[in-house]
Figure 1 (tube, rainbow, N blue to C red):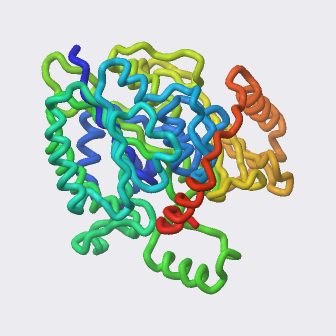
Figure 2 (figure 1 turned 90 degrees about the horizontal axis):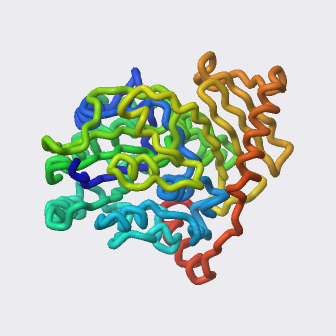
Length: 414
């Protein structure tokens, strides 16, 4: 097998049901084509509900209490954890990243990348940056193999929608129309790729979306009148609901030759997999050694066959940019149950949901099923106090914090 080039396509705020759901309002022929030609994991679980901790988890195969990034502000990657970019560079890959949003190089997420280019949030695939990027992508054929990490910002609030996509034909709300608009640009992106590319489509986290334009206008009116006293109903970071932690994970070969990596076409993997499994899975798919001592595992057996993995996921949310410990929620997700509690704030009630019977998480069973609460609480404590013990925080300098505070304000976070 020739080692493939890898394009890891991380679309900020991309929900699982926007790619593999049964009630999709966006027009996504490009994403649909990738799903039909590859393997789609329909129960992939993000490790958190904000960008920087999630990206740190997928690049290291560990959770926030190990890699050290517990919010989008002020913290750096633990220097002792393995980086996916470092692992691929050790295998002779040229590594590059194109990122935006809060993935500032000051977080040390650039570690292991030969090129780590941070761009402003307004640099979309449909702008001149996108044209330049596609040209640079075609020039990479002389530097094979390569691992590329492309982070796209089009779905993030305020959503990037070109005038031609603002009608109801392209979606019921701004989120769906932004995805329809992005899908056209993804087609142009894929057309610029050389042969033998493993394309991975993933979301860092999902998004709460107000379903219709009318509902959104009422929501915004109440928010404008009431300010922060009104519950936030659109966005992310707030909790670990299914809208925020279920994300797409699709593996598809583009331009594969006879001796390329072979993946089943149109396969769905319905069992639970996790964001932290990205690092060992990608290494395993290209025949590289899979690291031990991290919670992430290779899901290659489930992608190629139907091997049961028996995985469960730790999840967390921090609610505020500055990560106030009182706001933290942690949880445990199994194929059947989800348990959530606030370890530093007893005033926030614990939650327990039976997901097959209650996929919308409407009925809190925490009081009725204390047996399940105790079991899942024990699993959370085990992983947090086990061999992967919590690490000290690596804090940015005051100068770095001041610079990032200004940039996060420009992005609308602060």
